[in-house]
Image (cartoon, rainbow, N blue to C red; front, side, top):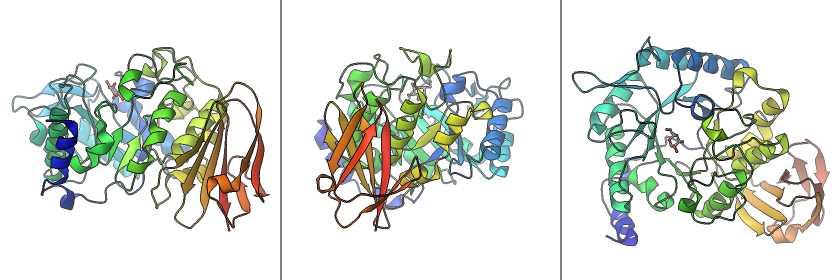
Length: 407
Ligand code: GLA
């Protein structure tokens, strides 16, 4: 079947839409194991990470999930129940889930719509109902469902995500479904209807600013090493699809990784970014109402990383209940300017300098559709400004200024 026909048939299928719950009214936020630990995860690390999320104030800033990524699995038992690796999780999953819940946090798990995951571990194809029940019994709140080892056509992908979504709905526990097929089959057109609350829009992020090429098609990013700017340039075009319980996911925050050797994010030229670039990622991801997944070692963050991740004014833009992704209203070789309407009538504006030199912006408010608002807060410097006709500001290379316009 042609992709368009497939999507139409999905929209007219009677059973799915009505059953969806309000599981992710704002973009999910938390700590994800992948880019710090890779496959080498252990219950003690995850517990100490959960402790650090609380002690650092990041949980209270909104990062209230711990997401376990690939590498936790230890095969199946003699009843085909999926089990954790006993060396990595000697106390069992239930104990870890209870520990994280007792910290006032939620917890996510990972699987894949094929026999094996991307890392080569046991996955859920053919065992969807059984695995969903196991995840529910352990107490998980969220499933990231990957697509390595699965056929490339659209129809199979849609079906496999529908099957897992249904399995989660019948599991006896509310769990968010995160669709992870990297944007290759335009999941923004079907993933929500198939039962997901968020979907990855690109190949995996690496800890770098750009691969140096202009890539418009998500599947062309594979193997190139997608940087912050490359992912921005795809995700920014998808604003029409984002809404509460339906989020474009431009992958994890690389903030604070600094090119960590051995981390998956350091592959394909991921040598690390400057704090200015990390601050831009945080700003732009929040403008795009992106899920916010920290992957650096929050147990040993430096002051810059903590400041970037804990900026409550910026997080409030991401978590605004209106749930609009910013529209990119200016896009040229120097500037990218984003506008995001907020629930109380305020308007957030982000100004990114993509050039390699410091530049002075002069952007008429009329070009941004802003009228009758002259007061703005600079959400990084915290200054209150009076802006009459135009935003005039010096912006360093790869820096992003963010303003909240109010009455
Ligand atoms: C894929 C996903 C990543 C991560 C790894 C785990 O590459 O896109 O986010 O989950 O698999 O193996």
